[in-house]
Every structure is written in C-alpha cells, then in structure tokens.
Image 1 (cartoon, rainbow, N blue to C red):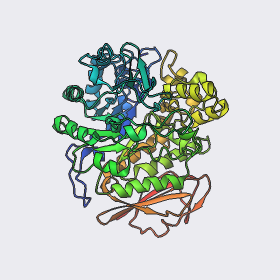
Image 2: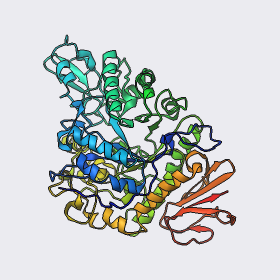
Image 3: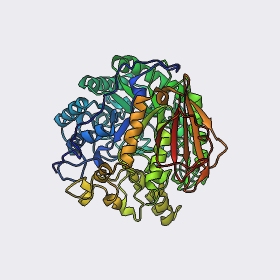
Image 4: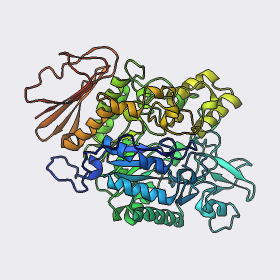
Length: 585
C-alpha cells in the first residue's frame, strides 16, 4: 500500500530548542525534554505500506508530516527490533536488527532522517529486563550448565521437584519454566518466551550498554525503558502472597530491587551522560519515594518515570478480578492520586503525564465518556486536565482523534498474549471468572483496546492497510478518523494541537508550581499553576451535568482565556464536560 501523507501542506512549527532560554523561578533547571510533548507510535498498528496487514516503518515515515502538523516534539516507537512476536516485539531476538515485518535498517535510517528534518526526535523502546528465548544469548545459555552464556539469565534448581517458588508471571501461570536439557528452571516474569536477564552479571550490563551506545551513535534521541524497575531481583527469591488461590505475587521481589539504582547510575555514567537524551523508565511498582531516586533532579539516573497508580485506580479489591476490575475510576480517587504525585515530586523529581498507552485502554473510554453525544467534549476535557499539569505529557496514537475501546464480544478478537493467557487460566482451565464477566473486564481494560489500527480515513480498514489487518479495526472508524478530524476546525486533533502550542509558548505550563483547588468537589477537577507573578486557573467538569464552579467568577479584565472546549460560558457553573483554563498576569 503506497501511503501518501494526509496533509502535505506547509507545517508551521519550530523544533524545540535543546538549550532553552528565558527566566523562571522554578527550582528545576530548564531542559528540552521538560518542554516537549511526546507521541507514542505502536508500529504494528500505525500504518501499513505494503498491504500485509501489519504496520511498518515506511508507513510511519509517510505520516510524519501529520505528526509534525499536530505539533509534537518527540516520537516514542514501541519496539521495532527483530522479534518472533510472542509479545508483539517486546521479546527481542536481535537488538541491532529491524523486525522483518516492519522493514529494514535502511527504512529505519530513512525514517530517522525524515523525522529529524521535520524537527521530530525519535525515542526507542529499550527492553532489557528480558530477551526473546530465540536470542543468541539464550540459545547458548540453555545448552548446558557450563555454557559461557549460562549466567546471562536466571536459572534455579527445582525445589521439592517443583518450581523454585510460587511466583505468578505477569501473563498468568508460573513465572518459571522447566528446561529438560539441563534439569533447571529459568525465570520469566512475562511470557515463557521472555527469559529474564541476569543483571548481576557484569557481562550482561556490558552487552546492554554497548547496544545502547550503538543506537545513540546512529542518532536516536532517547530511550523509553520497558519495566526497568524490574532488572534487580530479591536474591532470596521468596514465595509471594497467594491471592487468587493459584500463584504468589512476585511484585515485591522483582520491583525496585536492591541494585536497581546502582545499575541505572552505571548506565548513566557509561552511556546516557554522553548524549543529549530523553530517558523515561516504565517503573512497575514504583512509589513516590522511589521515583524521587529514579528521576532525581541531579540527573544521576533517568529524566522521568511512568507510575501506574492512576491507571490502576479502577482495580478492585476482589482477589480474583484484581487488575481486571472493570469499574470506571472515580474522579476524586484519580485526583487524589495525581495531586499527590504533583505535590510530592515538586522540586525533587520530574514527572510524566499520560492517560493511555499500548498497555492501557483508550483514555476517553476508561476515564471519560465515549458516547456519541459526549465523546468529543469529554476527550478535550481529559486532554486539558492532563496537559496543563506539571510534567512531560505523552499522547498515544489515536488519542488526538478520540479513538475508543474496541468492546470485546468474543475471545476470537484477542491478539494480546496477556488476554489469551488470562482467558485460559481464569475462564477455561479453572472456571474462576465467568465468560461474560471476563469479556466485560477486557472491554474496559484489556491492552488490545489500544492496539486496534490507527483510523486514518473512512475507506476500507480505516486506511490502515489494503490487506487484512492483524487485529480488527474498530467499527467506528467511518466517524472517527484523521481525515475527518483535519477537515473539522473544532476537532479533537486541533484542540490537542492548541494545547501543545500553549505548552511551547507559556513557561508557566511547564515550570509553574502546582496548587490543588476544590479538593472536596466530587465533580470538578481544578488546580492552579503559579510562576513568578502569574497564575493559571484550570477547571474541568468530569460529569455530563452542569455543575457549580465559581473560581472564574472574579477574573480581572487582564485575564486571558488560554483554552476551553465550549463556545460560551455560563457564570458560576461549568457545563457538561466543560474544561477551561485562564491565565492571570
């Protein structure tokens, strides 16, 4: 399929400067990655250039002008390395080769050069907690106990004829796989085809740092580090607490382990400090205190981390459903979590801002209102609420269009190994959760919701491919697509474009101190940003009803409305899903 960019018109945007200037009383030093907006691309689902139903690098290159038009600064690519695709590229068999379905290294180089020519930076997904079991290191490691690569991975003898402990993998089932050839078990915190690397082995660290340097020399602009908080394990490997009657919880023993900060400081010293990079760590199990270490303002480790408290706010206390809880998180609970992170990181660490990504359901479906009546206004409200907070914002592909969850009706729709394994464990094998409840859970929170193809236009398969897409296209693509959004000046796309431009133009949005407002409200999320003598008031109605809100009642004539998702305001109230931001000098 020969893609042409949706909009080849002249793009009015200034690439973010690597050495920002200007005065601010913020305690943090200025940096380009603080002022940037990042857009995540899930390559498999972004744009297919050859009709095989799988997105690829030439497809990304063809649509770079669209992303430049949106105004983002950085593109984070989910893994494009060679992989057998047990976990859609997060199982890497060769870190220095491109996945065949995605193209060639020449295609990557062309994409990188084109992106840089448009002022767009490229951040790679660094997956080094584990490799594929088809990686050369592991193929050697499993040959014998004496193999030089044996200690590249975590091998343990059986315990009483069974696995070394009771840990459950993140993808269901045991976290240990028995290997007949050597009579030992290897650890896999995810799929059994994703054996965990042994970071205690300095040879492993050397291999990783050499590979990172290779990509930096190629000219990439940073790394998003997959489950980086899991690279150091508790050396005792104790049993975990059993909650579902099947396996034990491994998370206290694999997250934020005893040497994780030591390893990241070594990474900083040997690789990251030599380049001007954006670094963000996916930090499973991270607490605020840990985040202050990972993303400290001294710059000894990473620029920022992703935490999961807010996206897990809908989890249920039900010991069976747990992470699959399908109830929509309440705004007051979300607010308490987000405000806590805003306040406690102030002056100590930099934060990241996101509603969704490839591991999360669609933002407007999970946190907002994806009904035809309110989808557009609700999506704009969510964007306003997040993008005007302190931290670096992330946009997941299609979020700028208001793409929605798929809403599963059959297990035949599943493509994600996490869903497939959970269905087998909880529905088929053990009958712990009934099929209708599991489908309801998946429709709310499953990862495949965000992995459906990017909706480019109203043609067959949403303009994603001329072939059969690897995962079903959401049926609402004829109404929700990029072509329609670009033709509508009041679309979600142009609203995001304005939010991004405002961040670039107003230091208070980047560096201003965060001050919570109306914390006793069950319906209005409001806050203030302060920088020098300026104030920015932000208020968002999270409901489909008109609600009282008086923080804008006494705005002086010198106040400037920066953005709102309604055409006119009513004094003393916010209309359904209304969002408004006013700058006071």
